[in-house]
Length: 100
Image (tube, rainbow, N blue to C red; front, side, top):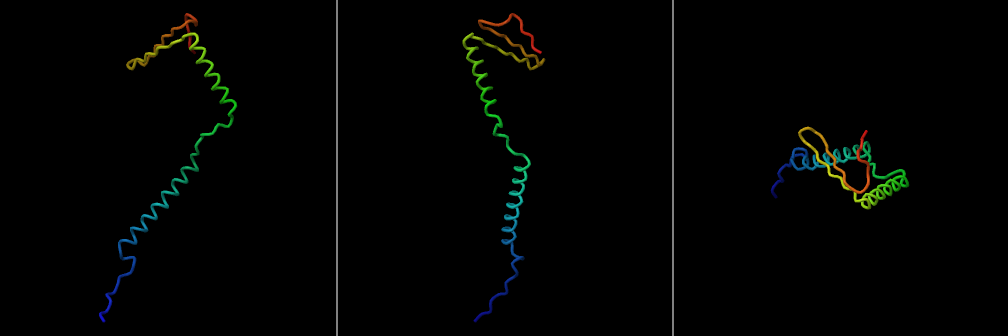
């Protein structure tokens, strides 16, 4: 019976180190993502739904009023000077509008 060739220890082979490296990277990146998620939570939920709903209703009422009065606004932005020109047209409104 032929003698078996002596095998080298596991740590001298390449494949165990590749598997260990993949697992180490996975754990490191997972912990990094958990740290980012804990330190930067999403602010997707409003604490006061009633106030947000009232604001939406006010905005919708303004849009309906603007459509009723046939109000239009044309905005021209000059990229060189940084000036904004707004031309308003419609059935109602003051002759002159001062913005603060």
